[in-house]
Image 1 (cartoon, rainbow, N blue to C red):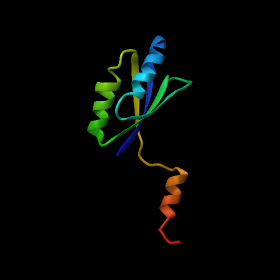
Image 2: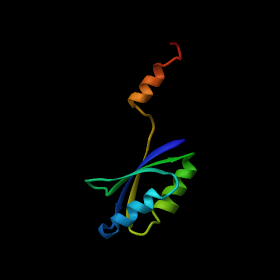
Image 3: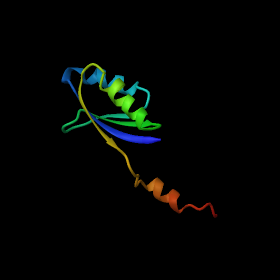
Image 4: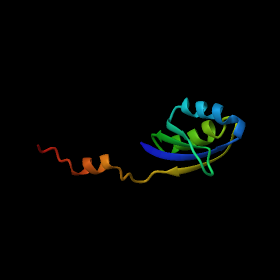
Length: 92
């Protein structure tokens, strides 16, 4: 399973509509409105690179009101949950 972060810019008048459409798109796990150069950050989870390419180019970038996307593929996670799991060998 691949995780990617999409920075999405859209037309200002489309923000409400685009947010709902993103949240309803299969493969999109989370959607956040943001400050800064992007209007949204979407966390996507797909099985492979082909799935990511299809999701971004054919489904997300094609949504009415989206101006630009910038995709960042996650390589490694450093969350606390992952750290605990790495040291949990199942011995009580």
